[in-house]
Length: 105
Image 1: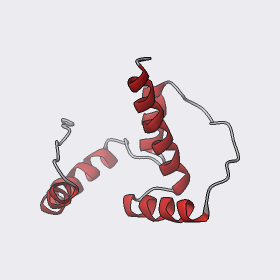
Image 2: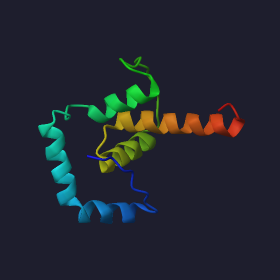
Image 3: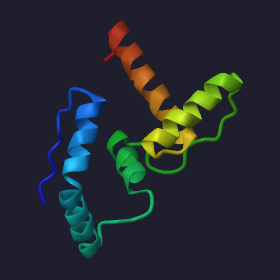
């Protein structure tokens, strides 16, 4: 079962691909289940392993404007994510972008 990343030029193009390939996706899902490769939190576990941040993250408190929190929850729901996960992803992307901008990476 080869994993190939699809390059999408737009969210619409990606949505069309997912709609057209539902059978393929379902088949791969069944294959992964039969191989015992499905589990709760699999994506998060893989992401932590790739970044070398295995284990629990420290708990922090951050104050956000209600409007920002509402927007984050909306975007997260559209992506099928918890809003905390979505906010961590945004922060990670922003920090990587800033490091590249200032030449630290």
